[in-house]
Length: 439
Image 1 (cartoon, rainbow, N blue to C red):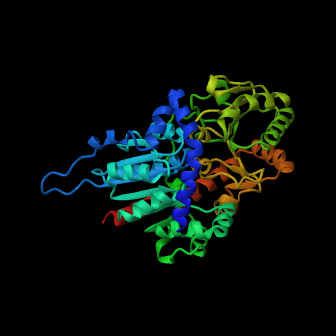
Image 2 (cartoon, one colour):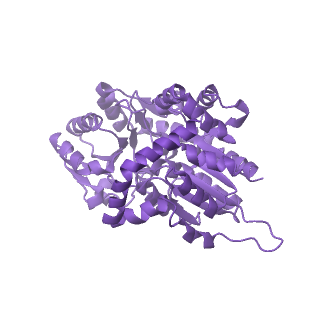
Image 3 (spheres, rainbow, N blue to C red):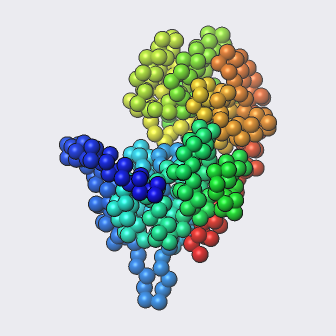
């Protein structure tokens, strides 16, 4: 009944949006192919790529993975690499909802999956077309992006499907509880839900999912490997070095990388860094990566208001004091060059972002008080000594202390990296679960 009402609302909404969709599709070439693909009209071209079983031979397993955007694609990377190793005969299809996520997938995963496509709209005819072309043996959803028609059609076709790297923020949990009549049937339709933490599992069970279907298999990002690049040593900091992001002179500075920042945070970060430059003679450099890369020029001007000269990575500029990393796919490597890291979305109430990426590089991790979406990881980092929670008034003092004490930085970085090492192995548990679905 709920699904029928949902589809009636989609039809009504479609009547109003269809002319706009047609106009965009016809007038803007960059949207044309993507829109037709998401409607299922052009996916048939990949059907010839899927190998047909020879007489008497077993069918090649087809695995369909779906990731919403850049973050989910990055999370899926260790799992997809391991699936390719453990199931070399498998035909892997990856769909991605956003154009930026698809571009990231093409950069990172083209050698591991056979096909990368835009995901279908949640229209029954579009989803049905994807399923008919792929003929998947299982469907794997990464973290989020739940759609009723997708899950209903997969269920009706008898295709097993699972969630990997699942997590539920406090905000999402409140929404799921409030609209349980809508979300509960979707979650209960999954054959298996693999959650990152015990708290995520508890929330899913509280939403009404049978406990036997909900497992805690860990966070796939703990199994990410450090990108390979040439490192230069700096006295007191082993293994920090060049990424070809900075000139040789800047690469020898003490580098503070602030990742996934939001409006309202950059002012605090720029103010602390300007004070650091004024109070300390040691050369330092700030790399700031906004969550929204379209804010590059805005942040250059904001840095200027604090007396900081900034350049934009997208324009191959390098400012005297600050580099605005307004590009996709480079932040993870950039953390490898950092001597200190700050994880954004945490000085403002955005729930924080994942602190594992800087931790796996052995970098001291700072974050603000709003780490609700990654509270268990943040708590573990603080407990082991690899991370510190800072408020806006205390940020400068913490930053200055770490800048002046190489030994403290090294100890914090080692503690953070040791925590990551202790949590590795989740990807193998996920692969076993996928094998279970396929069998």
